[in-house]
Structure formats: structure tokens, C-alpha cells
Image (cartoon, rainbow, N blue to C red):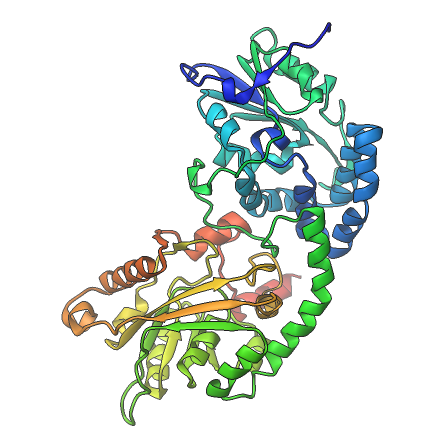
Length: 501
């Protein structure tokens, strides 16, 4: 081609009458505020690969950035792709791209580009990143019709080789050729980019605008097409090279700290554990007035909590300053043994679970999380109504947490490590709010149905926390994040599987 056209800044782009037009936009630095895709390659390397792979990727950063600046953008991106993807199962890459990456992409959307991009009827993404990596996010949350991206080479066994198929990484002329191949003579109405290598494809479009390198606040996540309710992955912050380096340096220190926090508190009475939490840097903020312990011959109170981490019942006991029991839908034998409070696993057999809950209430106070699974975002899942049928002494408890480095929950990872990851944060924070006991007229004894009671408590807790109620369940969460129904097999179900193996 001849000389490039001069492109105006995106702030001058009109969004009037765009609903029947087509836009083709670059991703990094254009639709996203950040110009670097490193954090997303790091998440693939860590979550679909291993800690060692992630460390190798981090160590490659000086070489890759030097290559990008002075040799070739294509070679730099190929290096990231090889380290991050080589040998990984495509199914694992797809799962991480669907369950982990959207949460981080959503924190980085450029507001001005989104203003323009969202006004178009047909939306295309043209990116140097592997298509498999960005497609779930841009289609679900940005409404993209298609992603034209770098394609990975895959073996017959379904693993990425770490190389790309022709034409290779989509930069410069390769982007231009990809646009011509996709659109033919009916070229896009608008092209959006942020760097010189985007000019090739932008010159083909009827209009083109550049996204300048200016600092701006990312688009608020609630402005996207869909809310992010479920996401997976252990990292809280987007792993830029500096954040990743600091996280990996903190990892061994945090692990030692978490061991102290877990095991030093196990033998202590809850009243003393409260002070030990303060000494060990665990912040527990208690609001409201909890009911006194039950008197002899009196059944216990049922504390109905929303579910943020596996430690919710334990921290509730510390906030109360007394022993309580809890029921949970899935707990390993090891966790059950080391738990400082009595923990009983529910079987999901209605009559059996009801009998267990009644027995535990006769013994004393009990904590239950009727969502059946944790939710990291400010949403409450649908409450199972079983608990409402079993007692009229119900106290709602609103729980919120703050974790700054690691998430203490997982779907695909090792659940055994969940409490350790919670306590590996420099200062894990719990805010426990005890609400008033439900009056009799709002319980089943007062004529309400179990579902009405459960829905009422869900709304009260959501209002206290500033969260939003949903009808989603454990099954929905596991279907999205792991491709399973979230059921924990019983011993009877496990035996035939062992025999087949």
C-alpha cells in the first residue's frame, strides 16, 4: 500500500446511526486500557499449567520486551505463546479462558472505545492474541460477533504445541490480510487501533480512529453487557510483571504465615482465638448483637449465613466467642479432623440431612450456608429452603470478606488448600453482621412456607451487604466454571467407578 492515512483520535468518532454498520477493533490498548497481554498469558500459564510454567514466563519478560521493542512484535508474542501454551490440553485452555480470564479482562475495558464499539450492529475483534484466549470474554461481555485472532497448532491428542498455524501471529500485514479474507469487498465501516502496526487493517476500513496512550479509568464492570457472577482462579489482582513478581515473592512467606494462622488457633477456645486472630493479623469486624448461648434443655439457634469462604462457620464461632457446629455440602476428612468446630457433611438426601440438622440443633447452636457453595462477587445464590422447615429460632448472619492477594475458594483446584489460601493473604478481613432473630410470624411456625422464609432471608442479607439476589445455584456455578454439575459423589457412587478403573 502507499502512504498510511492519518487517523483522528477516537474521541472525535461519532456514534450516531451506527446500528447497521460494522466495526473491527484491536484488543490490547484499544478495547482494553492495558497495551500488554502479559497478565492474560500469565493466567493461562498458572491456571491451566503450573507454578513452574508461570515462573518461567515471568523470567522471560526482559527478553520478550526487548524483542518487542527492538526486533519484532511477532517474535515477542510467539515467545509468550510458546511458554504459556506448549503441552497444555486445549480443553484446559478453554476452561481457563471461560472461567478465569473474563474477570480480569472486565477490569480493563477502555470506556471511550466501548462507547464507540457498543454502538455498532456488527462487532469484530482483530487481535494478535490467540483467539481461544479472548473469545469467551469478548463474545459474552462485549457482544462481539466474531474474533479474528492468532490460531494455535494442536496435536491429534488435543494439546497445544506452542506454535501457531499460518499465517502466524496476526500483526501488521497479517491483520490486513485477515480482514480481506473475512470481509472480501464488503469491508468494515470503522477500524479501531492503538499502534502503528494496526494501520494496515485500519486503512482498509471506510473510517479509522486511534486510541491515544492516555491514562484513563477502566469502564465500570456494571456497564458491560452481562455481570460477572462466577469466576475461578487463585489470584485477586491482575498479574502484571510487577504484581506477579511480588506475589511469587510473598508466596513462601504467606504459606508459613497461613500454617501458623491455621494450626495455632485449632486448640484454642474461641474467646482466646479472637485475640490470637488480632496478633496474627486476621481482622474480624463484628456488628449487631448475637443471641446468648441456649439454656439447658433449649434447642440451639440456627445461624443462616451467606457463603464467602470455607472458613465462614469458623470465623462466625470466633465472632460469637463460643463453640458451635456447622453443616456443609462438601468437606474432606482431613478438613473435618482439623476443624476447630464440629463440621458435619450433608448428604443431599433430604430426610437424612433434616435428621442431622435437627440432632445438631438439639446439641446447641448451628451454622448453615443455604447457598450450598461460595460466591466471590456481590451476589447471593438461591437459598435452599430445607433449614426453614426445621426450626423457628433463625438468626440471619451477613458475611463479607476482603482478600487482597489470593482467593480462598476454588472449583477446579484443590479444595483442601482453600483455608490456607484465605490465610495466605497479608491481612484477611471478615465482617460479620448478626441480624435480629426472625419473629415467629416470618417462620414456618407462623404460617410462612419454607421457600418464603428462605427467600426473605436471602433478601434481608442482600440488603444488609448491598448485594444482589439471584436464582442461580451451585449447579449453575459448577456447570460454568468446571463443566460439571457440582455434585460430590457418595461412597456408593465411588465404588463402581473404582471397579471400572
